[in-house]
Amino acid sequence: MIEFRKIYLFGVGFMDIHYFKNLLIERKEQILRNLSQTGAEMEDLKNSEINDEGDYASLCTDNLIDEAIQQQQLQELKEIDYALQKIEEGEYGICEMCGEPIKPLRLKIKPFARYCIVCREIVEKEPH
Ligand SMILES: [Zn+2]
Image (cartoon, rainbow, N blue to C red; front, side, top):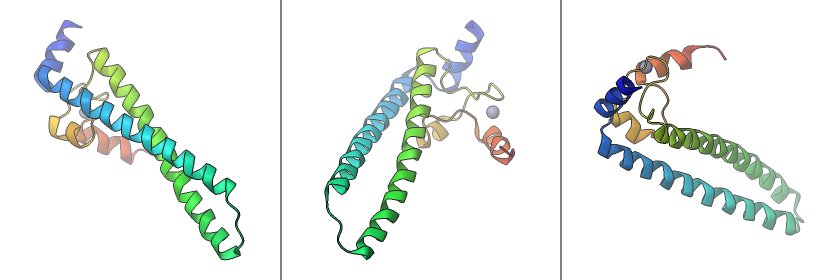
């Protein structure tokens, strides 16, 4: 565990953890806001009367897109919670596959990244 800490400090840096934690929390709050907004819009939609068939079709398409985005955001929310948990456990910023530190630049783009770039490519190529 002590050795793990050393890698972790070496990889991401102690100060940066606060930066990434803030990034994750901000992103989480943004998603939660988005989701509650979408929820409210859905309610409006249910309460509004639809007279025109064309309108109805376009509303359905919008709903499908909204739903896909919502699913994506819920998934991201899970990843963020997982990353926050890893920060608490002192395992943040370590690739889950090879155990090497993930580059801070990558974490800035995707703060909840679980794998380094090399392993990410391997994971993505694997059939699910
Ligand atoms: Zn890796």
